[in-house]
Length: 140
Image (cartoon, rainbow, N blue to C red; front, side):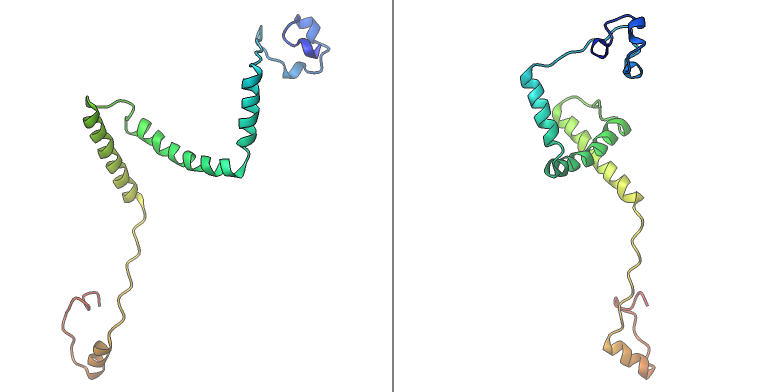
């Protein structure tokens, strides 16, 4: 009865070993695509398992998060303005705002280490002569 899944009555399905895998719906429609479509699906699914395809898709999957953020987080499914130039302006300004928001969330860069003293500064220090405040010594 495994080949007749969904076509018989419930009493006919009781002895079937595939019964737990059957659908709970009262009826089930199974469609078979044309051979050309089936061959195309098989070829594309095999192609999707290659490392080259996965590398190309990795780029796309990285962009999908950004597109989702724009669409859902910033209301970009609908434009506020009419006309392509103004809609473009809205997209550009929203992108700038998102970039600023992302940059503000990054941890601050470490303070740069002060420059080592020059030979003249070392000499002045050894002689006990005070150094003048210049742009080189502002951090020390």
